[in-house]
Amino acid sequence: MVTFATTVRSASLPAALRSSSLHSSAPSSRMTTATKATRMTMMTAQVQDIITTHRVDVREPLLRERLLGELVGTFFLVLTVGIGVASGSDMAPVAIGLMLAVQIYTFGSVSGGFLNPAVTLAVVLGGRQKISCSNAALYIVAECLGGIAAGFAALAGTEKSFCFDYAAKSQSWGTGFELEMLFTMALCGIVLSAGTSNDAPNQYFGFAIGCTVVAGALACGGFDQGSFNPAVTVGMNIANYANSN
Image 1 (spheres, rainbow, N blue to C red):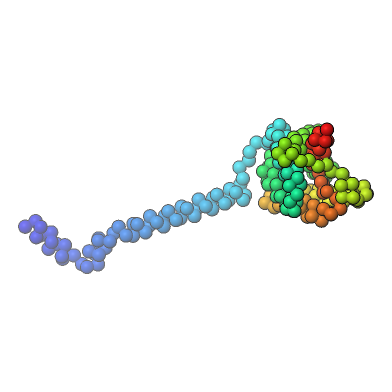
Image 2: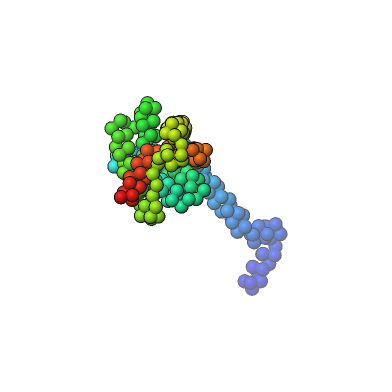
């Protein structure tokens, strides 16, 4: 009797009401999906806002951390020079430029990613208060030490060495002096324009600096060895001197 009465009452309900009760879970499921999508959109917008306009401030890198960044970055740059030139590959300038760009992106937010005593001096003389004279002197020492260590590492890895000498290309010293001066100036100029701008470290400064080195090495490769970096010259020449003895 109870079953019969329930059946009768259920049968007497309007069709629209029965349909609503049978499918009441579907709207709830759609609402849950919409809520999740809305929350995901809000979280994405918050993350983008943090990345673009509200970056979390971190402490200023310590001097020893910045010096270590310059030493390590210069080490890998000079190591790439030593191995690339020793291999005799035509792609050595490209490899050097890429390594420079990678090291600048790696240590740009730590030390500025100068990796070159000439660049360090240019930043000091630029007057933008990016580095003090005393710290710049320590930077230059760290960069040269990294270059010397890399010169010996390249020698140990390839059992070959070379030195930067204007006579290596059978050119006069004036040719080497002019090309080194002009392309080092181009390198320092792009560092001052892109690497020490108000938005540095930005997304493009490492690429621009690396491409400048590649362009300079390819342009003057037939007339000059294309160092553009005293740390490279010192590191490779000292290793070559040790190898010749």
